[in-house]
Length: 136
Image (cartoon, rainbow, N blue to C red; front, top):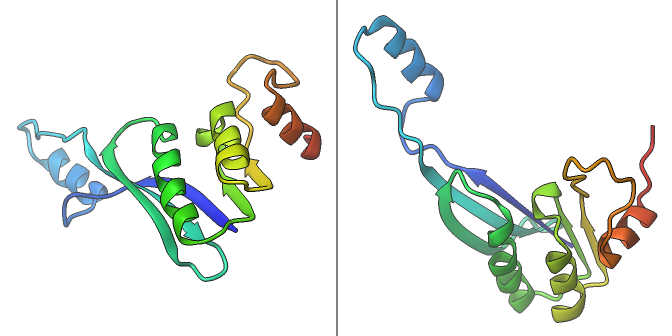
């Protein structure tokens, strides 16, 4: 079983909270960096071994880094289950896992996309919705 997720990394040795507090006492405007290093990791859940990594720069969408990280993971270890959050919810990712890597169990949280639709339109996403119905 593998999980895939992304996170942003701090580029300075001081916290954001400290920089904000220091800037409040300073009347001059401080330069705020809007870009940061971002890493997407595919990790084996039982051993905590990092199987795949995709590096990038944030803020960006997480979805494009799913395939490179999972390709590295699948090359190292046969996977039977992949877990991911709604940032990776595309039909292409479901198909990549099922068809290209032969992973039978793919659980990617469904992103409703603000459409208000109860059921997704694509087959893999519909099957996932059927397997995990919403609970109140």
